[in-house]
Length: 264
Length: 311
Image (cartoon, rainbow over the protein chains, first blue to last red):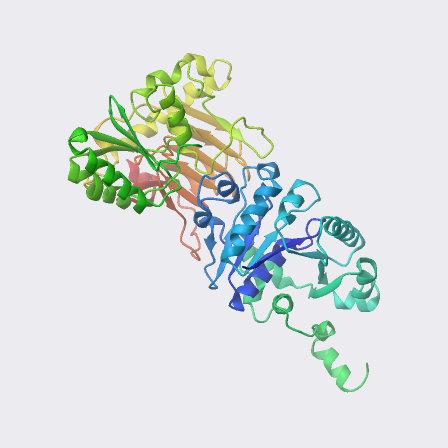
């Protein structure tokens, strides 16, 4: 019996889908059997980010409505063993599925897979309720800006009132230099407000945009810092103690030289 | 559904109508059909079979295999394969009507049946459809009234479009039907090329089919615009895209293997013809645009050719 996670944020565009794809792929690289469930019915993206769009024949709604078997709708990832995608329907909307049906579905998937990761749609309406219905744990993702943190706070409240005991936090797209200058909220500020356990900090990384457009999760790219951060998150989810990355390291050769000669 | 039978036999005047439980494993189904035939060998001798596979997608090999392994020993021949709805068939059966996929049902279909619906609609996520949609809901495509019936489209202003598009499609149809490859795999499935294909009603759709939109029509479908990724166009007959096809197109959704897809620019996410699904090869860059292309079935596989070759 595996466990189910939902990745949610409230606000759109903070990286739920990217995080789902990358954490899922990273867990699969750790030899786990993983299925990613796109709960964003009507605005599906996970298939595109995974580069599996053209393999979709059946989707989540077909499964729920009984038009196909669950196995028929699962798309096997082409790069890593043990990674599967259950795509959302694009021509339907969130009301096509009920929270009970999602719970049932995720329950079935948990019997087959070690990890069931549900990509939650933005918002706190039915799509959100569907996505969190079957989840055992919740991962809240935020970017270091006030509106995103505000929405994350709202979502954490909703999660706690619907029985999630300890949601965990990922801070995405942090720019260490801006934090250093005091232009960006730092991790401490965010944790002050949200007061939940932090399981990852993902630096802003241009390679994410490239990998998203190519349909290749960044964790497959050994040189991507964001990919490294997601791999660390996957290991922390497995229960390993992994020290947080030293984000300041990105200051480049000049910075390192300055450090060497003791200027900083 | 209370009925748990995996295979349902119904006699119609056009032959044996066989409804399969599309959620059941094909092997199990084959065994069930066999055992049923064994019990009543002489009764069915020589009959033609209409195989209703529901939402199952069988490829040519699988159909051939069913023909050879299951039906041939009992002197039965698969006449055609349809995608019906099990529920619908059972309902009609209870009402004493022949199944809709059987040819004899086409007459009853248009008149008074509750299942007559508008011959097309665009379903968007916001659109409230009265019926649940399926992922590959071929049944509404194949079973909807394809032949013009005055009662259907009176209130629709597309009537004019249709007249125009039919003329346009006639041209395409003539070309398409002459280009059908002469050698087909000898199969139990009736070779459709031998008889003239029925003239299907054609819908002319003006506008771009965007992500999340689906346009379907039981006849032929002409899109005067692009089909974007995430958009779906489905037709019982041919599909013509007078623009770039980037989304999913499904021609011959009712099982017509002679259907084809024409597009000024063919860069699809996926192409489906009858029950064959194809996707473009991965990691291959499309070269510069070389003109309109067509996708059709040849020997059970989807092939893409320049439009010139269809003459």
